[in-house]
Image (cartoon, rainbow, N blue to C red):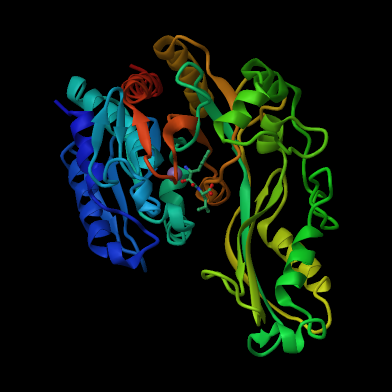
Length: 457
Ligand code: BES
Ligand code: MN
């Protein structure tokens, strides 16, 4: 018997922070753990080495007439800091009540385990299951999946003949209301450094004469949004597309309680772009966010200087037909144009990801050529979630990004069925990350029902 919770505990205890080279050993151990776990299910495992963290592929081949599902997940996790805010050690999986705590519990080890356990149980119950399965578990999702795209290109033919991708790496609004994610925002990352004087200066000797780079940075950043929270970059919204009526209907069913939402994140008011509710703004609109700003003296007390440098990290979330390179250039050009005389600017571009949208079957805008197996997988998912969780899922776009999902579509033609198995209270990317064991158990049941339906048994 495959024990999903015991396996998840072990999985969480392997330290797989992809961003930090100090975790090299943990990354290797995690890769080996995943490879062995999938190998033990009787799958043939291939470890694809990359420049950084290997990709684990595990295949159940079979009759070419059998449907073929690719199950995606990532074995890497976010860094753990600020570690002092964790109530239990991040790499000691701890069960308290209905929850399992630890870094990666929700993003993505727990949700991914739902599908691994489902396959384990199905193959145990029915070794003849007429389904081809390819697990694709990468170790670089949290650092922008740099190696997965080249793999997709190299193995295009193999992936292209699969039917769809199944994954759980997105949000559901609550344990009572599961979401099937039908859209992800894209992303464009950048960093700007402004330089004024060649070194920090005494502000008594030079203040008032020399342009202060922190002041210039503040002025530029302040110019990038209007008072009603629109991004003030000419052309920024040109490629935003219309949202379908059926999508708005789904979101209406979810309803909004802005006060509760504000309270849940600890703010006393919200600031959505003009004309959109907060939930719409997250899903339907692009953003320009300041992720970090620094420069000058930040130690104890004060220091009277005109600093030499100021920096900012920015990410834009993208929707519709917005292209990361186009938006990156637009924002960079706008910022550079606004740099005053006396200040020099340097730009560095980071990760990028294209927005992704998939239309479930039976909607007014469902593509005419949608594959029957994909369409049925959506129908099975709706049926399975309704049966197991006791309520019909909502088909919602999500505000987060999984850049590889649109790459998969572009390179291999495959669409993704994304079943949201983490919840707002799971603390993704934050201290005390956790996952509900009830959601995990139900997720296993849903995945089993979907895979059985797809296999036609
Ligand atoms: N699992 C998340 C993506 C996600 C978060 C989807 C919330 C839906 C709702 C994923 O691991 C993630 O954090 N992605 C990054 C992408 C970045 C590193 C390129 C993100 O969205 O910030
Ligand atoms: Mn994730």
